Image (cartoon, rainbow, N blue to C red; front, side, top):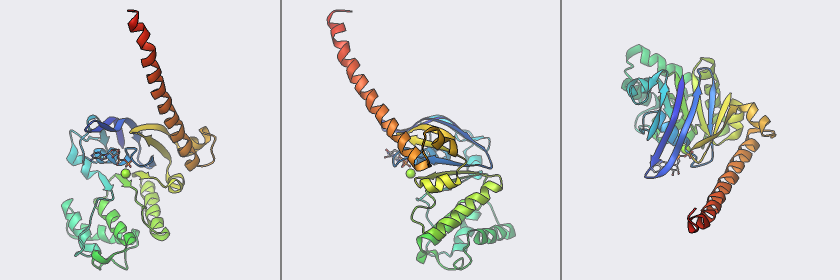
Length: 265
Ligand SMILES: Nc1ncnc2c1ncn2[C@@H]1O[C@H](COP(=O)(O)OP(=O)(O)O)[C@@H](O)[C@H]1O
Ligand SMILES: [Mg+2]
């Protein structure tokens, strides 16, 4: 359902995403984890055709992001913090507007809106203007908006950030339901409890690279830790140490090079 093939993205010399490679199938929740600045959002934005890759490519539901971007967008629902709503529209009006952008009309659009209002528990505020909504209410509408076209691949970037426990639970339940329906859910989060509870497999990103990729249980069993949070800290810590060592080695080699040149070897 999703194939990411040697994907890289540079911003003026900064390597934000470095040869990222992974595949994920329908019916799974795949976690994209990593500390701030690891490259998660950039990876997601390239997959969603918001940014173009510097090299490599990806396929969404069999469509290449470079060759078939329109089909990619039809098969993909993206939730990121940048997505806004129209404050003067009600929740329903917002959904109607974005549904029409995807070519939905008439009764099938109304049915889909009703379905989403129910699934995401928005009955109480569906006909109120979005301007005065709480963070949790806005996030529910934003989620409904991102999946209005019933995509096969759902990418949620930090979907529970800033939400209270009740609103978080609705979002979590939705992800579980989408998985049951055979959809692929990509969950990018820094909440290790949510990731451990939800993800079948996880990739841990650090400095633009995937430094671990496995079934969630296996990640902490292989690192001899008891939970994903400890495993995460251990993996990131070891990667930091390795990077520091490599820098030292490079410095050491540079020093060792000097006498060679001196003696013309
Ligand atoms: N549009 C941009 N221009 C320049 N640098 C960027 C841009 N977007 C992200 N970056 C940089 O790329 C790196 C990865 O960022 P991001 O993908 O947002 O990480 P994450 O989502 O894991 O926190 C960071 O160093 C960030 O500052
Ligand atoms: Mg991010």
